[in-house]
Image: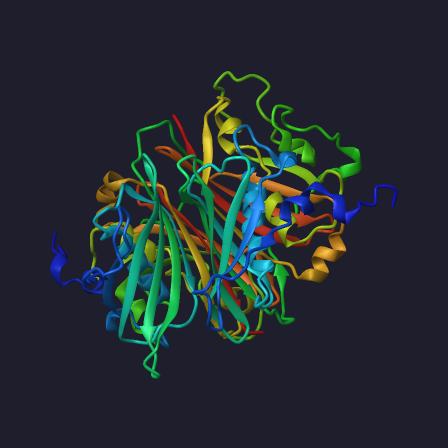
Length: 289
Length: 289
């Protein structure tokens, strides 16, 4: 393919390149924590600090890189305790319980403040599992839409860097043309993938799950300050389904159910172009007014 | 009211009665963990061990009982690392980060095994916050239904004790009449509240969020072994909205989006009888075949 990506030089791979730190003296036993150093990446810069989707992906990556990891991701919940600063961080993944086919994880991410003290910026939990083939069904069918080749690629903003690290092709539910406070529904549907294209994996799927612009901007047509406080991803695909998706587009859909006294929710789905529901994802987001 | 409950003797209050343990010698600093002893409660017994909804509520309760808790619950994610045994447990809540108006929590629950060793049975994370009055909207409207007084109270099974600790009035989406493998949709709608009635609070709302019978039983009409591995609750109500609900019924709706190689999801909503969306909740559930 003309756009064949060089995996080793893709910005997303650079962002996922965690460096293992030497185990600490007190880390022994059969299920030790494993610590890594990572960095925010300029290709995924947000207005302030990094795009949270890539931070969530880095949290998952710490689990995926742990030498005792069992199976593939089933669920991930990331709590954004504070806005990361651009720069390095330490992240630790601990398998707190390993069962026969499932494994439970906790993750903590620290940054060193200007006072020289390490503070918690993020906590996460994850479940991985060895899947077995079973009966299955996709009950949330992919909405019908023009194919991605027929939809123009238009980033929803050019004011933050991370948005241009994705190819987004909006099918329905744009940002308001005028920020006039006119209420609308909260639904957005779009085709999306990494830009430049990159073969889908669990980490990039996690980041894509956070790539929808804030629902309240569409719902209310006001430039409301927001920040995701907690985000959960459920993975409904094995490595084969991810490989089959490859560098292709995903179809994404997001909407909200409640806006209440400073916090709104978002529920979203990500399908492969052939209609396999790869992930469902939810988040709760702070909003200012 | 004729059915006015005596709060001090309600089984749910008994289940939530965590006993604070003395702080350990190494627990100092401004944001110490706080440890409690709790017990499973016979009124919430499941087929094996306790009903997971009450266990999730106990995890939230450890946060609510922490003397440094800031504000009210915004989100809770509980990972069920192993099936609890009936009996006592230790639970610890730690405020890992306290911001101006939000606070981030980790929770761990241990039980002592037959080998005398403590093992992790559950991990959780939570976010609490001081809410401020803002613009708001309920975008997921409560489905129309006959009022609870017009719907018969029928527990979906009488084979496990916890089900009779709830008053469930099924509006749509019963269990299959015959376990013949006939496929159906996964949707269930019902009125539900504590039995005996009890004024709603964040802990009981959390338990109610897990009170739907497994979606795969309806979807497939097969008695499939299941177990929730991770559950998230987003709270869209302040103390006033909970107080206004009081001992009234909630309207609950649950459905699944994907069943894939051993794990299915459930998305659900809980409204007050007047149509306020009190909570949205999601879980990912292991299934055997």
